[in-house]
Amino acid sequence: MKLIIDTDPGIDDAMAIAYAAAASEFNLIGLTTVFGNTHVHQSSRNARFLLDKLGLDLPVAEGASYPLGADTHAPSEHVHGPEGFGDLTEIPEIGQNHALPAAEFLVEMARTHKGELVVCAVGPLTNIANAMRLDPEFADNLRQLVIMGGAVYCPGNITQHAEANIYHDALAAEEVFSTPPNTVLVGLDVTLKTLYETADFEALAQRSPDMGSFLRDISRFYLKFYKEIGGLEGCGLHDSTAVIACSHQAMFNMVETGLRVVTDGDMMGATQPDPERPTIRVCCDVDEAGVVRLFTDRVASLP
Ligand code: BDR
Ligand code: CA
Image 1 (cartoon, helix red, strand yellow):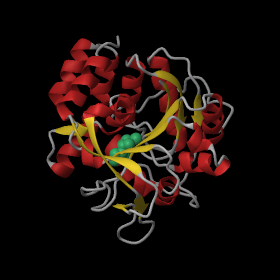
Image 2 (cartoon, helix red, strand yellow):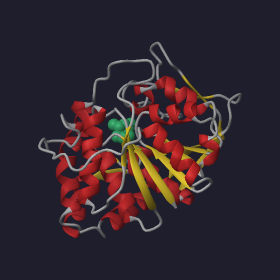
Image 3 (cartoon, rainbow, N blue to C red):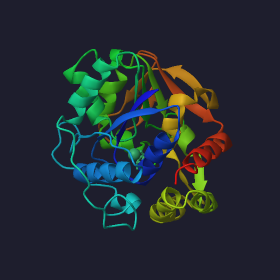
Image 4 (tube, rainbow, N blue to C red):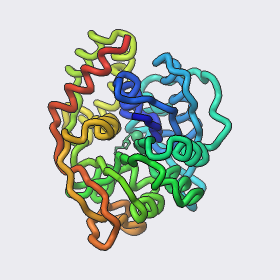
């Protein structure tokens, strides 16, 4: 399966990229980056660093710095650390970004691999909305669009009503959900069930001394955040669960519904079922133990 991950690495993004690199069913074409957990230049630097660490020579196309119509963004330093990788602050710049901006790269890859490319968006949806604006056939050219975002039948994480990726660019999400030909939404409804605990990270580090230890080390900060805000003993495998949904849809229960995104006010970023909208598949339940096991087994195969 040809895959591009649109990402804001970000600790759980790093886990998802490692998973995609380890899972043999994926042919990773490249990464596109977006603001979100970090500023976009940090997302791109972290993406290039991760690919190098994984031994992959793949393009990183840099995307949006800000939400649609905005000219600022405050990164989630309290969740992902000042540079996006927890307590790790010295992250080298390796290589360079692709010549094309993310939205153009996505449009071109969707045309080149028409009907074959899966895009897994695990950050704010700005690049995806921009790709749809650039080419009205973009979404039709994809095999599937899988989105980590939203909290349809459960509370949010950044506010009571909103999940972070959707909240960070609610306008983009609203645009994307109004033209979804083949879209799967993997939101907090399932990703707060696929928790990865300290003991899971330790077991992973034992089996994968380089990558597993790296993920364990950067995740200490993330685990602390989850403990402090929700008393949770693990962190959500948010972005990895979305990547797993690209290839293992039988592990998920989905409902078909249209969705509307609230774009202002107290409810900004809320993802609400709306039967008038085009149908997308919303994950509402998951084989959580299966996802955690699959993640560990695959990433453990890395050095
Ligand atoms: C999502 O927000 C980000 O903090 C994570 O990387 C994930 O994509 C979870 O709400
Ligand atoms: Ca993310």
